[in-house]
Image 1 (cartoon, one colour):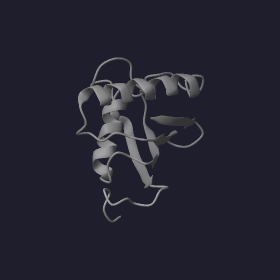
Image 2 (cartoon, one colour; image 1 turned 180 degrees about the vertical axis):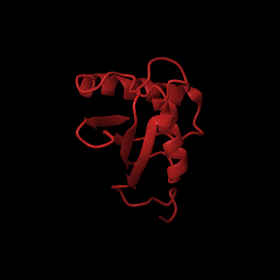
Image 3 (cartoon, one colour; image 1 turned 60 degrees about the horizontal axis):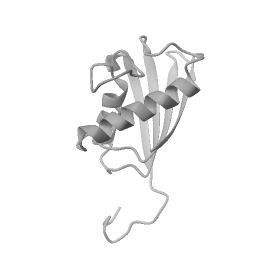
Length: 122
């Protein structure tokens, strides 16, 4: 998994932007989701901790761009992201104190390679 995280405090509400390559979906084993959470938190500490205190405890908008996600189902991908960001899910430090503070979500996915026979039609 690779990720880039940006925080724009000048938007109202502030905008948290995630660019994630290889996002897991909610039905993967807990260990995968836990590793995803830890990786996202490490990226957030390096990239946005100077702009905002972690965990974020105020209203935000969320923009997500996924490259080669593990599922074509956006709802499963979004739920995995919420689980990784929320302090009440999984273990360890988190990006958000509570995912209920997310006011709006914009999400898109991108598959840069052509579908293989195993993938089926897209």
